[in-house]
Length: 136
Image 1 (spheres, helix red, strand yellow):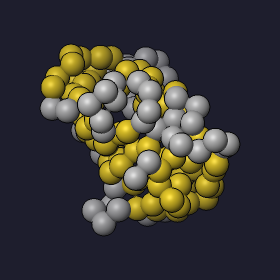
Image 2 (tube, one colour):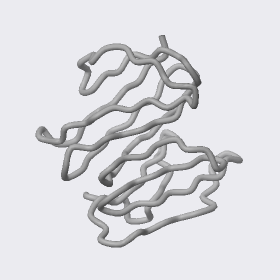
Image 3 (cartoon, helix red, strand yellow):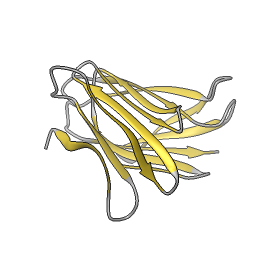
Image 4 (cartoon, helix red, strand yellow):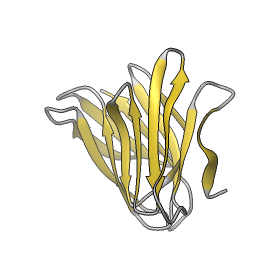
């Protein structure tokens, strides 16, 4: 499946899936409530963006589809797919060091900036990619 038909949904285990990288025009879903938090997703072929309570959680250029997006105090994990390699920005804690894993291979450590943003690239030549970002 190339996109989430509803644009955003809650999975059985409580994680969120969102996005549709095949959409030709912008699609968005606002005011999607989960456990008292309000989510907003914007997606299309050029960009996918997820906000929680008006704060950026995830953005990719070009657009992607994200499955099982799960975030807690220690870890962010998700599965991502797209047509072209993507630049992904996630917002976490400010000036915090994280270990980045893609398909269980550790790529190294990165420190988030003053705004808490981390940037990474994902290559889709082998299909969907499993991304895990662990707080050090």
